[in-house]
Image (cartoon, rainbow, N blue to C red; front, side, top):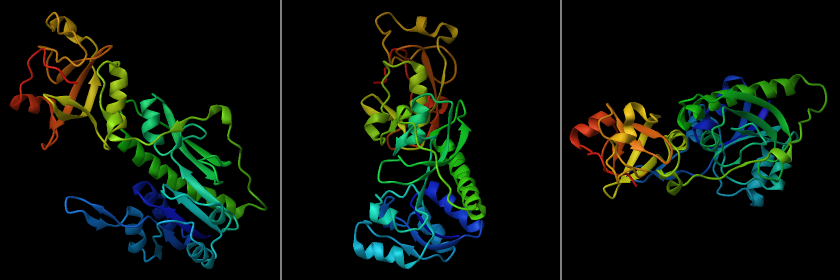
Length: 320
């Protein structure tokens, strides 16, 4: 099938690779303009652009799709359908109408749950046990189009957003290839299923401020934050007034009478507990969180025990 592919990050690059491997004719690859990255702020191509150039595919990087000249370029390639995966630009109705078979969005949730920018992180934060991939016929709304197929995936009890992202990216590539194969052999139009608006939830974009750990909250919720914000932007707190990232943790609750080991007057959320074995044990609003991998500002990631070897934390120390 002759396609336009629109995407930017690694999640989309996996889908592009799957389409190439399946033998589809990629007439044009749309991706966002190169962005400054790294310490030197060097202009860096997106993962989708890297894949496209590797396979000799034509790449187009407009800053908007609203210009008539851009839309004329899209019409000129005569693609049957456009596949969109985490592209990052709004597709106006004029663009949605260009391919005869429309535009298909590859979304990392089981719609209508978690419409929006951060479905993977929001699913972990909410304690969902299942997520998946939805292929949707795009319309002018925010992830509101008819669902062409849904592919569930169980969320691991200790899985981070980065790990879940990688599994969903692979599933997305398989799902879009299967759908296009079904379209190729179908006789007549293929219709999608309308979303149930009563079940809609929204996955708002994540920012660094939201990744700060509030020790007044239960340990189980804080652990979800650690998982959901790994690798970006990274869950963090303050230690001695400086940023302190938490990369890995587990629920300890009140192991070995941990709460009783805190001096009277220091039974406050965020307090470091003493004498409970390896790791850093932190009193939470409910329960105890054991920190396993941490990082101070300007330092490297360390196991909690390695950190403590160079930076002892006496009982009564607090994270805030």
